[in-house]
Length: 103
Image (tube, rainbow, N blue to C red; front, top):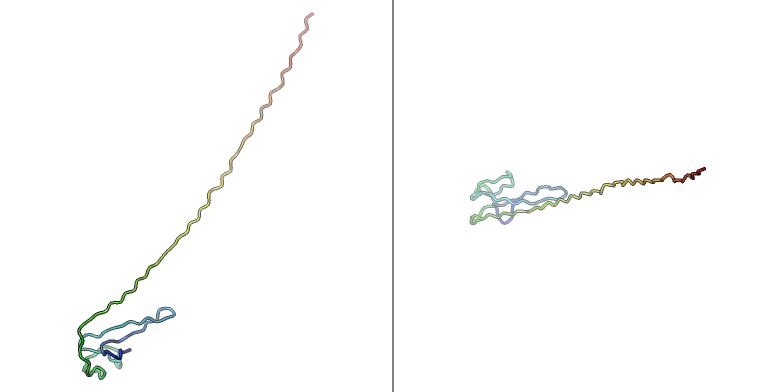
């Protein structure tokens, strides 16, 4: 799509997901955007460029920054250990005294 105020500029809309993004382009000095040819052409060949004076070369740079964030969650469980217990019961045999008789 041609810029109505500047015959050197034109725009393209590019679909990105569910929306569109507008990109601006500028034809080289001495040329303009031809809607018929869908390309830059000599300004003399483009009727809407008649009477427009050349403007100084300027450039505009538009940048977009994208920051991606990633989070990883790791869950660990403490191992369950069983403690063994041993109980030892010692029972001693009772001692008995034998009676001795002397005759």
